[in-house]
Length: 617
Image (tube, rainbow, N blue to C red; front, side, top):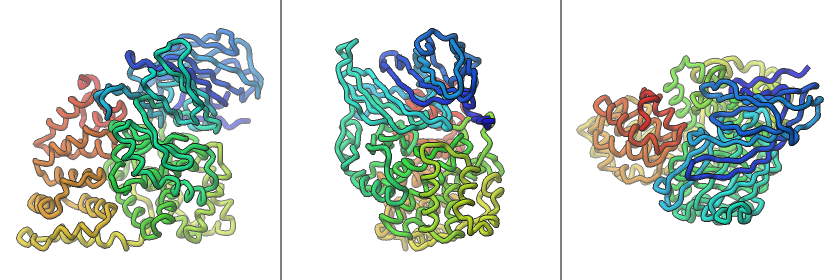
């Protein structure tokens, strides 16, 4: 019998049938803020006498359903808070196992679809044209396309998208030409094909006043013209990173690797949509120092996109391996010391997440249960950094980076084009290292996988690059207020931006510094003038935490000028925790809420204990 596959984040019939291909035809309507059109799903029966199937939807209006061209009965089930409403479809005639049916759903999205952010011209860099972008991970694709919205299901897709002719559309697929819309001469139809099977959360679309520049033999950078040259400079090392990744993990199977720099409200640092990585403009530091996020997204081409977590409970398989691969790229392009330095920084991010959730919170498990849990609420650095720490620990036990990378590459080959669970991964680990099973049996798997809080083992990382940061932070922590004259601008001039970020992170781990010291730090180092987003973010948190009132408007400005959750949520929390400015944090949030990405706005509302119902303006 088939093991019944269940995904707590999906209502679709995963054990009865599987989607093999999607054919999308969409019309982008900026006036009404909706996508209208139809999707044809090629569905294969996994059992005999398949008479009905269920798709995931969320806030969709379904007009009609056909099965192999014949009208099919359908109904929308009750709406669940985050899973949406199941679309139950009755097939006109039963299918045998292995047979295919083409299910065609005509539908329209809602203006409040959680996958889509519609920007007014004012919210873009160019200020003249509207802009649309999608973010489907984890479970938002169902608000854009009725589908089996589970990472356990992988399919190819083809799409035709009609947009106003002054705009350009790009998708997470290979571009396949464009022509005037035969139905409407004021519009253009763009075509896309994705021949590599992938999960629904990787379907992505962007429509805006986009331009591109070539940055390599298989790479372009896309953005509004205001950012495009800056982005081409920042990401000029993309091909080197791709080649290094191929060397480590095997051939790159997706053909094109483009990068799209989004408007500032994009909620993540990057998103690994195939053929078209999305990146936040907060990466444009001017010195290529934040391009390691691109190394991370490139790594996802193997771990995540090629081998995918079967459900979001196994998210660490995507993210832990991707961080491991990203840092191996850093090791090749920089040094082993650089990898160790980055790993130490990651451990601190993990500590930060555990402190925020609470050390007993089951969401800090490497493999959490997501029964009745919205995967957006579970998102944190835990799967990334606890996952990396486990892989690094195994690397140390099993013979070092070369040996362990051999396993990672073999695991990718073994599970390529499919989805895996933690158990699949662990069984393969034991098979691959069959001569070292005694070592593997000594690992406290339960503590690593199913126990909240920090990991059971803290790796001893090489501190060479961190020592200068540790020494400088200790000087500031221990300095007496009367002898602050020993500090000089040269203290930070010798540090790389990675080290400066680490120095500030170390101070954030301690009790807040006295205000006199932080104002002195500004006087000596002029940290207010730093535009690198990672530096600025930590510096402003430090200032607000030690109750420097002048920093509050700067922190609120950074929290609202861009919408990357990594920056926006902690900045709002810091100001909220500064009693005197608690109401100010709420006021600023309510004033900016409508311009924020729906996922970001929802999570900040929870952070600030703002009632979702009455704070929408």
